[in-house]
Each structure stands twice: as structure tokens, then as C-alpha cells.
Length: 254
Image (cartoon, rainbow, N blue to C red; front, side, top):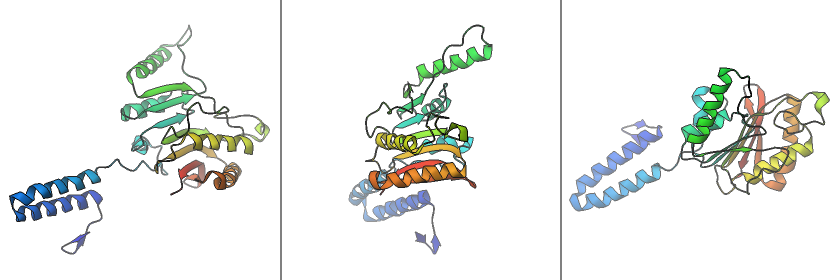
């Protein structure tokens, strides 16, 4: 938008200037027109206040500054392999109290057995208090070698942090990290499940599956993606952080 030869590229400033010009125009028309124009200005304002586009999970998403903002705009979130204390789901649920969130892991934190350290007891107390206070957080045990126990199209965001990771050559037939065996069959089955529970009707639906991958592992995930794409019709791409591969993204093809 250009005014007096100056081009504005800041969205909120452009919206603000539009509204000021519209109000000035309405005032010039007199009182009767003012009310009608006011309604139209309000309509434009409401259009501008639609829910924000979800966070990008870009290169620096895991920095403390950017972590929570990456979850903005999603209306339902499944967080897989989140650790027995489901710390990240607790943080996200506290930041977005109106968004239903499922935090999961294969094991969940249990009361410390005696003799226990004071730090262990305090950590469990904080955990238990959060589970009681955060009404939008549901904590579940989910085994990623089994079907995810939710219906199709349940979550706008399916998220996993550090669940895709290095597996030694001697572990080629064993499950590791989040329980996903390093075989084409296991990887394919896992991606199918993520896609199944993602809310495909939403253009914002995203599967963000983070992990630190060596080059040959990243190429194996890419190969699985390429074989599934014609069948499932999704966008499946490797996520980069710097010069390394750090996971897989699943998105709805527009």
C-alpha cells in the first residue's frame, strides 16, 4: 500500500491506515452514513482479527524465545514422546489455556519410592499440581509401536521433540528412541498413523516430528515419504536446522 509516495509493508500498519481513511471518509458523509460505514469498518476489523497462522517451527523454534510461539494458532495439539514428566505439554497448556492438548509418553512420572531425594518429591508435586490445575491438558500413555488411540482427523498439530534419533548399526532390527524401529515398514506405519490423526480438512494441519538424524537416516525417511506421497497425497519434507537434518514435516497439500 502506498500513501504520499511511501510504501507500507507492515500488515498491522496497513490495516490501521485503512481504518483511519475509512473513518475520515465516513465523517465527510455526515451522521447517517457514519453508522453504516462504521459497520463496514467493524466488519473489516473482524476479518483482520481471524486466528493467526500457526507458528512455523523454523530453524530456531526450540529456543526459549520461540518455542511457545510455534504453537500459536493451532486449535488442538497432540504431543508425542514428551517425557515421563510431560514438561513441554505442561508449558504449552499453560500458555494456551483454551486449546485442548494431549501430552503422552510410553511411561509417566510416578511418585518417588523411598528413600527419595527432596528434589524428586518437589518435582513430582509440581507435576501432580499441574495435572490438576491445567484443565486443557490430558495426559496419556501412548506406545508408538501401536496405533495411536484417537480417531481420524483428531488434531491440528501432531508434535514430537527429539523422537527421531540415531540408531546404531547393531540396532537395525530393534526399536530405539521413541520406539520407532529403523526399518522402512516401521517408519511407514508411523507416518501413516500421524497422517491419520492429523485434521486434514484444516489447511493448517501439521505433523512436526523432530529428531537429530544422520545423513543416511534422513535419506531413509525421505525414501519412505516419497513412497507414501502418491497414496496419501500429503506434503512430506525433511526439516533442516543449520546444515543438519532434524526431522520430518507432514503438511496438507493445497
